[in-house]
Amino acid sequence: MHSLVQRIRDTYAGLPVGERKLAELILEMQGDFAAYSATELASRAGVSKATGARLVRRLGYADFHEMREQARNRFQSGSPLAELSGTQGLEGTLAHHLGHDIACLTRTVETIPAERAQAAVNILAGAQRVTVVGFRNSYPLAFYARELLVHVRPQVNLLPVSGQTASEELSDLGPTDAILAFGFRRRPPVLGRILRIAAAAKTPTVLLGDSSLGEIGKAANVVFHCFSRGARLFDSYVAAMSLVNYLGSGVALALGTSAHERLRRIESLHEEFSDLEP
Image 1 (cartoon, one colour):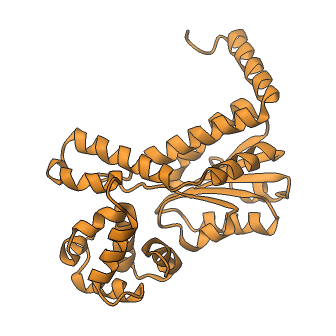
Image 2 (tube, rainbow, N blue to C red):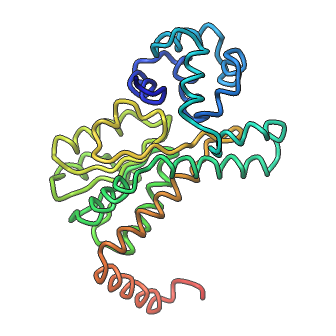
Image 3 (cartoon, rainbow, N blue to C red):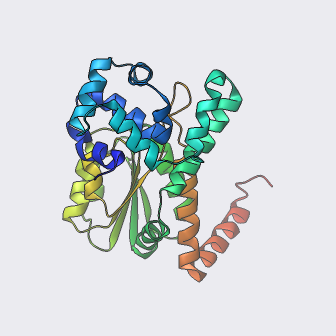
C-alpha cells in the first residue's frame, strides 16, 4: 500500500487547484493533520468540504477516516510537527513562528537519507562546472548556494542573469557539468524546461523544492523535499537554507586541499583589495 505522501506526489501534477491546495497543506502538516476533522482541514486550506472529499477519493481512500488513520499510523508521536498542534492558540506569537520553523527544519532533515545527501555532494564536487538555478522566491536560495560553492570550487554560475535569457548559458551543457536547481512553489514553467534540457544533455542535477514539485522532480538525479509552509502568511525557507549550508560544507570537505587553497587565495585577495571590514 502506497503511503499518503506517495499517493499525493504521484497525482499532484493532475490535481485541480482546490485539491492541490489541500494536498499541499496535508504534506506540510504530515501527521499533525490527523488531529483535525475533514471540515477543519478544508477550512485551513481555504477550500470546501466537497473539494476535500474529492481529493480523498482521488487518492484511493474510502473516506477521510481511512486516510487519517493511515497518516496517524505512519507518523508516530514525537514528530515536531505533531507538537505544533498544542500551540494553535499562539499563532500570532513569535514563539509559535519559531516553533514552526524548527519543526520544518527537523522534519526535513528526518526525511533525508544520508546517502542522498552524499550523492548530491558528489555531484556538486565532481563536476567541472556547476550552474545554480532559481527563479522568484527560489532565487535568494540559489544566490546563497552559489556564494558558498564559489568559495570552495571554480566555475560556479548563477541563473537567471539579470537582463539575459538562459539559452546561451545552457547551450553547451554536458555530462561533465552539474545543475543545482531550486523549485519552490509558484515557480515559472521555465525551470521544468531547464531540468529536461539538462537530462537530455546527461547533466547530473540536484533539485531542492517543496511538496509541489510533482512531475518536474523526475528529471533530477537527486531530489530534496523541504517543508516550507510558513506559520503565518509567507512560506519558510529555513530548512532549505540549512540544507544548502550542509551541502556547501560537504563539497568543501570532499574537495579537500583544493578547496582549502582556493579559500586561502580568496582571503589573500580580500586583504589586497581591503574590501571587507574587520
